[in-house]
Length: 354
Image (cartoon, rainbow, N blue to C red):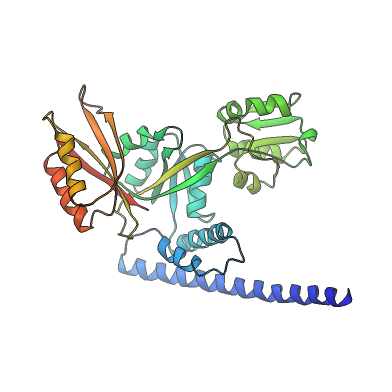
């Protein structure tokens, strides 16, 4: 037993050395990022998102001792933090402070970026257009509702481009400084989150007073000040206020998956695993849509999605949305897009993303 205790102590000393090496490596990484930012500023190089391929290449070398998703989360925060060290980043998002949109934006841009909450997708895009924000994070697609039409409608007349997309799981946690659900006497929540958790609140906290607040951030602030109170919130927002999760996944409908788009002023570079989103409107000629789709089929370009929606300016006219595999600079897509543009009343590439 003594040998085992000695081994544990030796291992602890070894982990302390590794921690010191990690800290030194992170500080070195930060210095390199700052220097990159200085050089970019001197050259007038525009801001671009971190290269996700570089991160994935690094993660591909893992031995498997640490769960890949855990490593990906760690690297995501490192990349986001170092990106903000290159140059200050302001990110607009569609939603209230502390909502899932806020948490989603932070998951990609890190804790070092600054964030501005916007009531609508159009308002978030306007922040980027007016150069008050570098990027906007807006809802793009959900598992239950499909494409977010408000986002497509706001992007269509805009000069901005989708530069990246990412998926996040939406669920609510009951967070508190109380040790258990039984100790909770008051719950703070925004009206929307309260509605999503009515059955849970009725069954698990029938005697608790449920208080409406304006933002999830406010709910967490109030819950943090009262050991008998709790908040319905995203885990990362709750943790920011020192709250612990006392009950996980309390949405009555279970989790939802949401795909968010990152929107910027410059098109994304080719990565080799791109998807490209396009909107276009056609005339009334017979077979017009078939002719458009034929351009992609003949060039071996795979369509992953196609939808139509009414145009806001003409009665009984429709805009088509398609998503294809590839980048606008890929040779097969260049030709296909040129033909679609030539045969369309309206045509626009919304952006490319992985």
